[in-house]
Each structure stands twice: as structure tokens, then as C-alpha cells.
Length: 83
Image: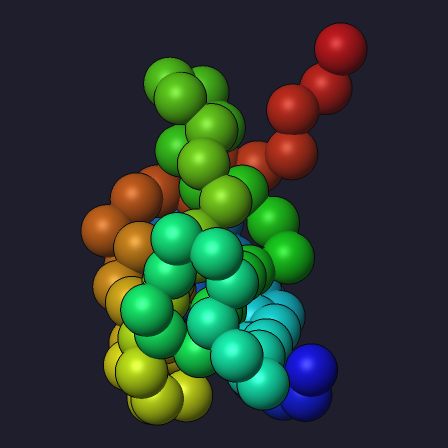
């Protein structure tokens, strides 16, 4: 497996939030998948409603990264949850 790291800045009303996105390249696709690249952000979005960690699959680094970035843009970042 090969790893690649990217950073994305999301502008928020109360300041910028940085996401680190890791893209994994598999030598062969995992069982049940037909693509070799998986991207995942380092923090969740939409925390107050239904938290989700942005991710994406693709047959190229760019496609997986673009899917992950689309999810980051689509959902609000509402800060870390505190108990």
C-alpha cells in the first residue's frame, strides 16, 4: 500500500479549519471494491446532526481525493464534540 497526504482548508464563519486527507493506493482492490484508491479525512463533519468522516473511492488518486473534498464542502464543520 502507498499513502499520499493532502491538506484542505475549509473557510468557516468563526475561522478556517484544516483537514488532512490520506489517500491509500492498494496493489489490488480490497474484496468487494473495483477501485484501488481510498481517501479519508482526519476529522468528522456534520457533528451535531449525524457525524460523518469524509471519504471517497476512485480509480485514480484525483477521483478519490475529489470525492472526499466534495463531502468536506457539502457538510458543515461544527467543531469537536465535547462531553
